[in-house]
Length: 287
Image (cartoon, rainbow, N blue to C red; front, side):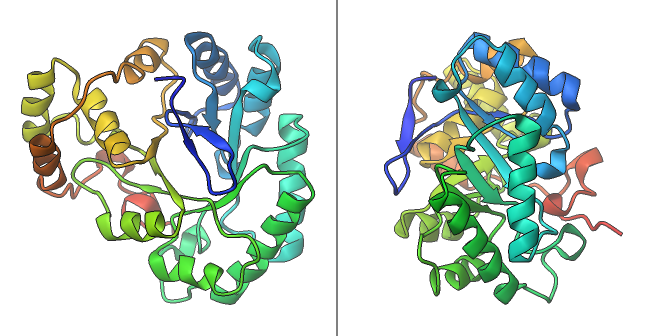
């Protein structure tokens, strides 16, 4: 699995499987990066909002693998909505991680988290943010640039005036909650879709239909969910600090049949993400 990649629209290759680091602190993140790299991972995903970029940098420096062999993603804070704020934040990310460049730089959200999916869409601000992203790309600070949590009209807003097209859109996409129309729109526009929380932050693990199909292939529900996204053409970035889970998440050398894929596409929509439901991406609101 570790050698499998997709090609971005600018020719850069991105591993299909990455390690997510959301909700890990710096020390946990540094160790998770070292463990993941030793297992075979080469793709690490972080964000300014995770407050663990320093840990990612420490993990990179101490993992024993050359920087150029790794693919590092970070995300510009959702609240940075001016050219200067974005430019400054990119430089801060590079400094925190101790890197000369970021492989993939993403706008974390089209709106600040406190206004996520509300009326103010920040269309003009996001055009300014994108210009800063393009300039970082031209300056060699990022090898690729993209979006996260952008809906179709958010993406169309960027496409209407951009000089460099977004190369990815990182979104919530998993069994029981797959935004097929958005994925299709992105793919038609040569924008690779990345799936965060591909195992629904654990909320899908008790899904009865998923369990039946997983048993059929002799795999875990988590492995089934990761394979499902990959067969849809998505990058998956499951978050874990557990080396055993890292290994299991990479054991995906099976193929889900077309019939079973159709079943998984149509399983009952998940409504409750349990203790994580308060996060905006899971439908919650930050007060």
